[in-house]
Image (cartoon, rainbow, N blue to C red; front, side, top):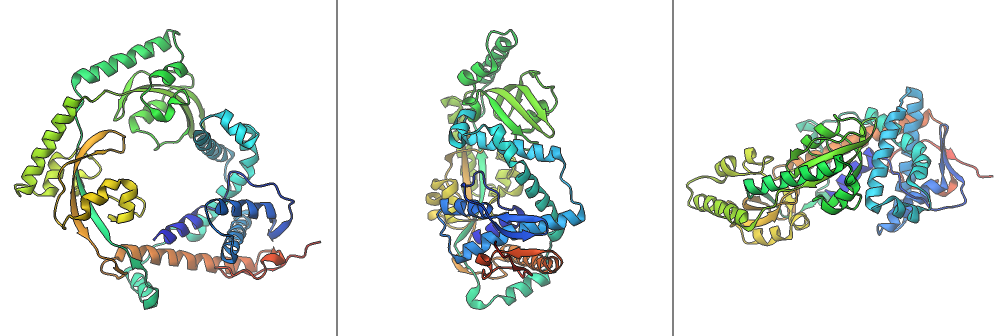
Length: 454
């Protein structure tokens, strides 16, 4: 499954790296008017080597073919007049640089590592990012919204040699009933008064937003940057946060507002297309031991009526669970990485090692005793887990693994479409490659000639 996901990422996002080594360049490929430089190839190769891969013949072929494919997409985009607007490129550059700066922690750290400012680096990246965005748009036109019919899924499955069918590890389906401690009115009042006082100090000029955020904010993600978040796009933050952030004007400081994380006020620093930079303060209402005890008592009583079969787990989640995402779906947990309701044991360990131990001796249909865990909002809560199903390790089959095989069939169909497109377009496009790559074993059918080096 991980190989399938890797392939999807590959065809949906042409490779581009943050930094490339300095080499004496030469042209190793030409597609239409677009060239492939040796530095492009080795820059991508270095990223794989850093991640533990060996640059063998197979990887060498794959990396070069990825670059060929991207350049062919660009060549076709030239013919089809596929255009990416400058403001779209600006927005993507801002988003990426915000991510990089967040990883480094500060502009100073970025400069020390790369020997140049983020602004200078951003300008260097502009052409590469624009090419990548154009290629992505062109690729979307090539692949389109591919769907497979039940007949195609069966035919694909039947075409796989028996000894090539994948081995599926043991997987489980889980339900959860979550009970979050309720914050006392006194704690909420104290948090609200505190943040109102902090905002007043900023508005009166007694303290800066940066100083307040560094000392007082309860948001660990922005405390080290003085409360600043760069390159925010819609859909990244809580809806209430974005409703305020995208409404106010640059330089304006908002009123205090509330999200699931607590109380905030923010300042809009700048707006660049669909991206904004903000500076904010967060104060959360503190949960005390008494709040935790009350939540534990509530979930313990729910557990009792479930094990006594006075109520089903599904009914209990609908009636009592505090998890909005799962309560109306019988508590079913979603494996976002795979897009299914099934989890491999190794995946559960990556989410929460305690899950592995809790489920180890559980039978299908059983529930765990209430246990403490941390929510996606990084808050303490309690939950009861329900083991809906468990599969044994087995060879993939249509009955137990239909969704997985459907994904495989979809990827296979996409690959066929890409293969036919490459064969057709490379016939009518000037494609030449360096002799070094002449004997590469490519995944797709190409029409090209050898590129003579002077």
